[in-house]
Length: 410
Image (cartoon, rainbow, N blue to C red; front, top):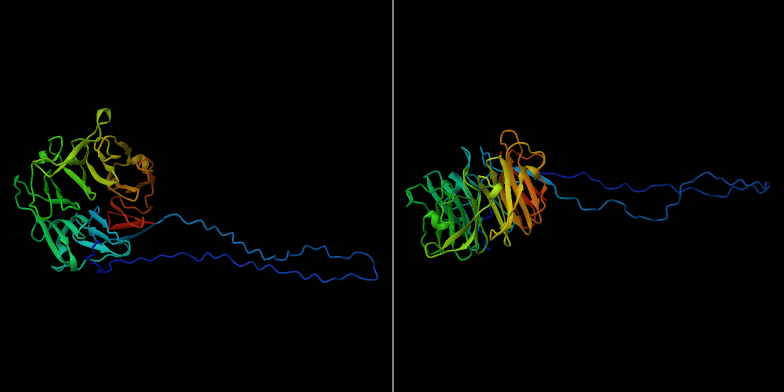
């Protein structure tokens, strides 16, 4: 996979160490045992005083060598004035990419080559290209390029661009204003498949843009043609494998939905299988803000708006059967409203992150290796919201959230 950027401008640096815990050497003295028997008196005068036992040379080290479990370290990323982190991506070589998209001053694209300890801006042409950007989506595709979606606040353009060799920035899509449906399209999530098929979802509505390959024109189909139930739905999070798209969404007053891959028809090249996640006596309304997929299994997370409880679901990508979980049961000690904000997976390590009431609570981090049994590994200094996560190639879990917070678990 092509790598196109490497320059870092350090932002914040932290260092930590551990005390020397070497065992002291055994220094027991050897007693002198010379014979002091009186030859004119046959009385036994042997000294029976207990003397130190001679060291026989046994140097077995009894130090506990059990490897220590993973621990958290943390730092601060450069996104100012935010209540969450909007975009986080991990390259195969360990480079982290982070996007600022919310808050009054939330602008910029940053990268870290040391696991999140320090951050800098990428060198681009045009220079400082992302300094005025509200970055909402970051992903690297099979062509080796880094794709970034968001809003250029200097001209209000809703754009998708890619960073190619030498840091050159190339336009992928710029939304017309208004769009063919008469609305303003705000670029939210973007993903590209290995064959060049690509999809952009709207941040603020139910519009979806798509193309068949890199050379094809962008299409703006009716939203009802995009979903198998012929209804319009809002996508809130989007991910992809090499060959398929996966999405999650809905609105505050509609049931939660998972959107799995479906075969496109003559009207659209990409179509989603719309699966309602909560039905019958367990039905509720609420948004699904997060999705992750690996090897045909998906995790979809969000909130039950009726009870203010974070919910997430695990099941096969065809949507045939999902198991539901409650965030406040798994994240210990949570008594305020909760929301699942992000999900990620790599090599069988699943992570779900979220927030507790933003004024009084603490974010949470849950992890699982089978999708059925979940462990609360929330760092003790977590901010009120943890909104994004990635699992790096070496297994390190990286999370980011409110108050410039970034932390890693390894």
